Image (cartoon, rainbow, N blue to C red):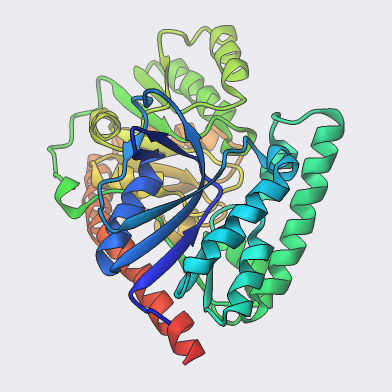
Amino acid sequence: MNINELVIYYGTVTTKINNKYYLNGAFGRYVDELSNYYDRIYLVLPTRLKDECEETDYCLTSNNIIMQELPYYDGVVDALRKKRDITDALRKYSKYWNSTIYIRWPTPFFKLLTKIANRKCLPVCYHLVGDSEIVVKKGTKYKGILRMIAIAYAKYNAWQVKRIIKETPTLVNGNGLRRLYSEYNPYIKEIRTSTFYKNEIIQREPRDIKECINLLYVGYLRHEKGLEYLIKAVDLIKRNNIICKLSIVGDGDKRKELEDLVHAMHLDECVKFCGYIPVGDTLFSEYKNADIFVLPSISEGTPRVLLEAMSCGAAVVATETGGIPFTVTNLENGLLVPIKSAEKIAEAIIRLRDDRDLYLKIIKNGYKTANMNTIEHHVEEIYHFIQDFCLGKKS
């Protein structure tokens, strides 16, 4: 077995243009950084062909990444339709594998990857980055019979993962996933995801926020993000005769509903929807223009946006749910508030406005937290986990 190679399998889509590959910015940065630790990485992803890339895409730069293209699919139901073509491709590519197989889940056909690894006596590492059952149940992508199929498939996959990871080294994003799966696996480790490099942490002088508070949210516009409570908090702050502006960066199936809420509450001049912005200079500029970053989630993993905000000098207000307290310590590097409470979010924002010492303390400690959780640190942590628990366990 070659310990200097790695197979990465994931369901996120890559776009191929003129023999170059473009990924979601966060995942693309991660793969490029991880490639520094290996002679060769096999990256197995569903791939679509296009004539030009979107400005939101990240181009892979490493020369030691070997792309193994799977048929493109749009969601779990489409993947099931193309099962034969996808499984044929996986079996063909597996002939080249002689190293650890690193599976980011949720993703279709993970069980087949595990069977292939077992047959070839190769170590496996699982990385659980989300809960597909919750996403499908609360999402609006599928309707009717397709929704029933998607939910049933997600439940079946969750059950299969619990069986598979009993003796498989596993990384999880967030306390919620750790609690959900740790009873099945003694080799589980909770980690924080990061997307910024150490040289991208540039300290700035905090503004005086007495006159106007610039608020920021970055993430999906979905039910579990609790954005209606943040919008209502803006209204409460406004009623206290305090000027604040909220920028919402991201997209999702709740956008129209949230835009309607903003309009109904006459907050159009206070709330701006920016759409999706990829990881990079443009997104980091949004963070640097913000005084306070707010994450009002109802349920959550270990969100990378908290660290991104800290690295750019924004004070953090976040709900006390999921893996958020794994990153945010109340009154130290952020303020924690209960879920589903516009009042508590507003109170926390006003407290930071009125208590300059606390505001500066949280920003200062946020920089310290960011410096300990760069993408370099994140990737090094994963690399050593694979070396110690996958290769060490198999030796």
